[in-house]
Image (tube, rainbow, N blue to C red; front, side, top):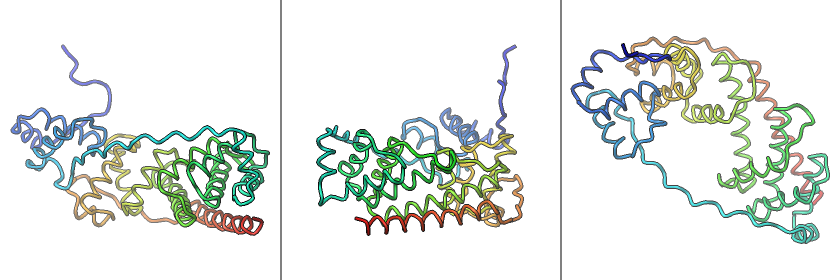
Length: 316
């Protein structure tokens, strides 16, 4: 006899939902419903938009999908970035000799902060940020300091980033339009808040303090921008554990996105407005000493960077 169930967690649906799917007589609607049960959102479903929209409309007509759920079309692909120029040693020598340029002072300050003599390749990377990306020297200085702080935080005091890491982060800043001191400071404040918030969310998810991976940072940043409080995050976590028997970031994100689409961001709102019959328990709010220390350290980092910028301007 053929095996009907393969190993893994089990998805369950009510008999009413099954009857409505059978009534629809649509394979796409049934598959989409299973995907929503599995993931909690439309993320990860690689269907053409027309197919996805048609199946979603059928489910919404039967009350099997939230009315606010949309299958938004994918944004148009951005044109590929132009590759940076291959700077020759003569280009770097000329840039370092230019008395009217801020690049010589920037190179000296980066050497001081990294505690090493920059190689020819290092200088080419730095000049790529300055010339090709046209980032102001002050913005590059903030970028370098942030990379140093993050490297020391992850790997211990005294550890310094490679110029290749700084280059990668610099291109990311440029793509995000962070090309002024004001924009850089706002970005760093947001990153500092995310770092502090990340420690707090790990505590809520019963995870020991540790550096976040990039995907976790993305989720926590999105939840913070959506406006969820700690009790709502804990409630989504508990539902995830009940369903998946372990933390599944993607599944928890699906729950929170569904609540966000309904305008539910606090535990009382969720208890009153979510039709899911599974109970949502309140979690007592407790101040996190680790999160408080992270906040204080982030403020100290920003103040130190500002002082260094002022010093660099005076020396220039």
